[in-house]
Image (tube, rainbow, N blue to C red; front, side, top):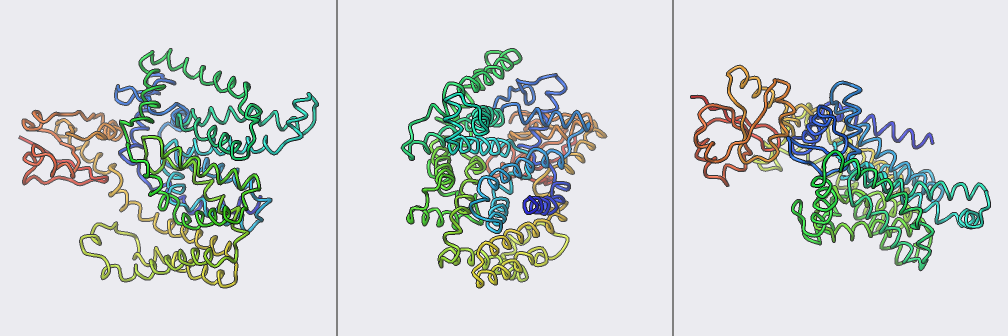
Length: 539
């Protein structure tokens, strides 16, 4: 417990400046805040709207929690939202995985596994951004953990069947109840994947184990509880949003999006190609360990087999679904990482395993050294686009280089788990140091400063705020409302005739849209983050 608590305290401390100083991103985070504010203002709890447009994309759990925080503290706060709704669920996910496996892999390997998971690119990113994915990942993990507790509790299952009250039967009944609740909460967090991932993982595991007792785990109690909870939710949606909203939620955002996506459509091989960086820096290590484990027939142990089958099942399942973006693979990451962690003790001294960890360590050393000479190694066009940090890049990246060097030392001592822990630790220290430059980074990723300036100018000069061919522009209303302003859309004809106003647009649209290009030719415009720009037009 002390080991786990110390690890979480360290990670929290390293991410704290980032959570305090980071701005909201215009594309998704500001949209969610606007939806939450609209729901509070209009007293909505089941049917949500984004600027009067039905927003059935996401279930309500995340919005409810954000609404509660907004009511409790009077305003939105990045530290509270990201800390409570993203980082804490990430800790719960890793806590469950650690509890699940610690008696098999030991303290040092458990610490390495915790740090591996939290330093993986997409898991780390999902721990600090405002999205529902980490909540869903947490509930999927809890659901599969409850299934494992039932599956391995043979005595409890038999005692329950024979109506004998024992400690084991009580535990079996408890997890029999929790499984459908966790599955519902996964659905209630993000949608259909929250149902498909745990249920299909359970079915695949049982089939590969040649165990046809599906009804013991996914029997009538499971479906009754799940359908009852869903029915209560859908009733609230129907009462508040009507038949059209319910149809949008149940069919357009699930069936249509899964079979022939209208949003984020990508080919089958998207995740097969993306796995390498989504689970970096440990993607190669985990995959090699899984392959070696399969070759050596080490998957006989229930936890190892469940972890491996869950990781691969989620990967294949999401590859079949039409709508794809990298963060959708998040529920598979804990199982990929812990598949590797469970198999690592068998291959601590394996030459290939040590070589992979050593390659990561040397990569960190090379990055640290190269940062000293970045002005000579990078083309000027790239170097000028990098954010200005509070210190030279080599100082920020020094922990990575030192971590790589120390990791090499532990590898030479045949302590692969400690080498992994050191490399992961160096990532968090680097993030901590880099976080103090968020003011510079925010100018590349956020839009707060520019939006507030534009709103103030528009209010002083009594001119409208308008946008052209820019789908995320309404999200900027979060900042404009602070000056009692609102942004409105204009079409190409209105753009040509625009004489007075502040025009928002995407810079990359200039080359693609001749109307926009002709309108702003020779015109100075302000660049914000995320490719957002605005120009002032006065008669």
